Length: 294
Ligand code: ADP
Image: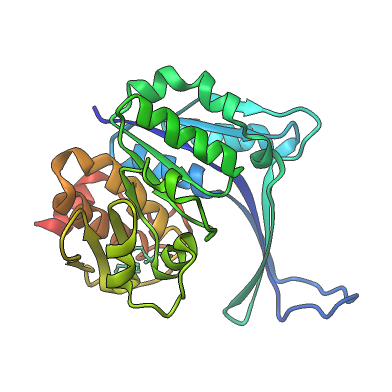
């Protein structure tokens, strides 16, 4: 069984559907409300577990009413939460989302995710050392991202950095990543380059191998030489939330089969994820991925 360690964020998404966005100072009555478990870290952990991996989450929740539900949500998906720390006197990460007329407005409150520290990564280093791959994103402190890259690299475990949300990182850190998995905007920001720069060129300039996602067009990947293209799988798109998270999870789970196979399976899994509502709602099981690949 492939063992994956995910170091990242865990959020409660609080979604209100409203007839329109309120003006500053205005109170509106909404049409519908739902709370769903999210955060890039939690989402990638769940997607990897659905694909059959043995998944361990390194993360943090607060000591509020959301904390238990967030941990239980991961456990129900067979994600090990023994390294999900409870931070006292702290709120869990939240995303307050208002949806109106097909657009959304989002305020993310990092809460406990901002208290996930390098020491938590060090505590989990025995897990990292025995992992087949480690996944990390950037909704946690950058010093914790660095600690994850260094720990995995020191144990010769491939670490996949999903550089989202977009921020620039030191080149020395990027050299520790086995792969980075940005979209075009994230890659430009990460490298401190012009966002309109040709993405083939950005991929060649990056200090580590790149797997670049391009929505319905699929993905491009480069270890050395020229970037290669993997076409997207044609599906009826319903909701693209969570496509990137599913892509990263599948890429980590199937990486031991080699780069081109892992990218192909990641595109298939991510395509399936856009056919259903919600970030976690569409994350597929292996049989569905195999059926799409057949
Ligand atoms: P992000 O939301 O992080 O920018 P993308 O939109 O590039 O990520 O999506 C990640 C991956 O999901 C893509 O590389 C592709 O494989 C898959 N994907 C996204 N949208 C579609 C779609 N409409 N049809 C098929 N595959 C899709």
